Length: 427
Image 1 (tube, rainbow, N blue to C red):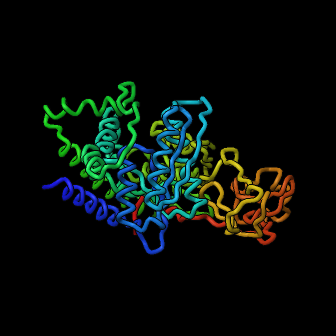
Image 2: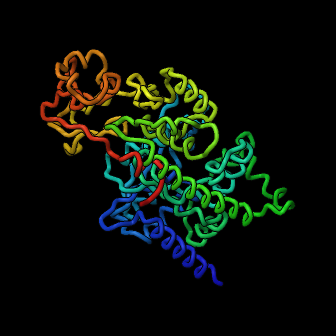
Image 3: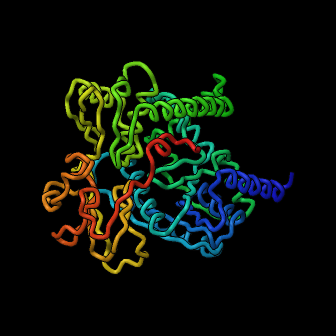
């Protein structure tokens, strides 16, 4: 097969993989996370052949940690311009807290998520490859992960309300670089990708030894496939269990006593972890040990907090799980904001509609705000839930608290239903 024919075949394979994700829809706008490395550069060029470039938006994040980053982003800017793709460069500053790599991942995601929300992106494509998938599996094996961890990365999932697609998961890294060479497309190599101080690099370097044990790429990918099949079954069982034993009350979840017994079965554990993540607007589940310990305290009648949630015991042995007001962050609409007044998204779960204008601040109502809501006792929600409910302020003046009986033209709705959105199942 000629190089040109092989190159065309790989581009066609990408086009099929992209459309199979289900993220390419009429009039949809698709984001591309492009760092300048070979994987994401290949993804951008292949996407421009599979989709009208006018419907694509590229984004790069400079972490401010390497001087080469500006050169890499300049490369992306130039190539995106040649392809007719609009490009945005974002910055991120490390606060010197926690693990650098972990903080960089979180910072990069937060920057891209905010950009996607402001740009009207329907889905964000990330250039994770088959090699990334295998490395993820090996690292999670080393950490003793269960079924969820050993599923590695999904081809498409929902993260913080944004659909994320990985069209390159079926592509080997070397094949993508061969394609770039054949197409005479340049890319940048990050030297940290060969630094053995990082777990992912060491996992990559284990391939040759693993193959001597029969743990070939094919076998490892089969393991991921088996784990993903098992996970789908467990998610369906958990959703069905939740529909029987968990009730949603605005932004809170009310658990039957049977759903608090995490001692044996997978479904209650999975439902509780999903509930904490949903209420707290967190991508990652709480640590298993912490989850078990806190829920055991809850079953003994103690009010506890976990991962930005309050777990409140109820009469009869059930529980209410609600947002911890102190764990929320305020949002202030910037002065001179160019976004259309289509309401305000807050805490990733709430959508507020009303007379939007610059300078308005949305935050948890809190004790001070509740005192300015004379009719809050007539509301169906308990006081502790209202403290964490969304409220609209202008300076020090409370404008609205829709769930506490003070609307002034504002309404607040939960963006997604827990039962249909928290288990990663497409109905």
